[in-house]
Image 1: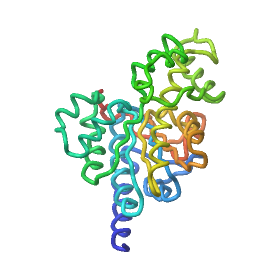
Image 2: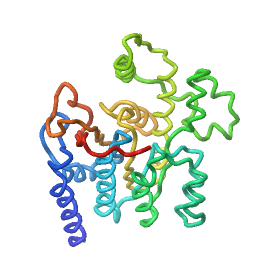
Image 3: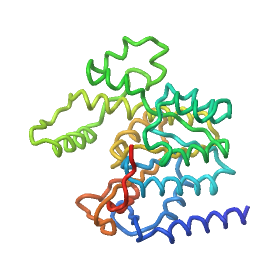
Length: 297
């Protein structure tokens, strides 16, 4: 056991040493410099780790893979680890499980699971690691067709769906966005348009909450069923930054859940923590080099 832990620490240190100050920097919530090793050490005390990404951040994707691999090596012997993904919708969970079990080929898995365009470069390495280590992979997100329903027809329209269809989303009625989340959402909308008026009833907020609630519920189901679980969940950073969104819904489904929020975003000045932009985006903020090539979706 000591040799395994020693090897794990060496790997974690290698991750930090080889990339730190080359194409990313790590800070705590207040802007104090830290490293990837410190993030991974915190996994011991939490049930869920949220890795909030920019979807086209190639450096962030590389770090996600390294973090996940090291988490599996450090904690996989003692804990039930699961990879949870915004990038797969709940109704393809049976297909994901069939692939992990070796029952269907990767070709048929991809044809049936609606993967994102950057799956092979950015998410496949984590899924393949899970398959190799016989770990669960959670297709966590609500099907996009139902999110679109909420945007067009309102949240109550979901009650018109057959019972079989409703199993692929958070139980109805799903939770509403918090006041803080709505304020954050309105600020984002205002940044896109000078004419974006603040609203507590924007249908897009209800759609966003369906995403958040469904991912939270998907994670909670694993937490309830597993012994000493550790879930590593990948999502767009807006869903978790400032501890809002998915974390808020998660503690409703499983009170007392301990979680860690890591927010990754690319910046031209990635070595400098700007308190006005970066403070309290999460427990850790990873700034990556905006000049690195973008992932193609």
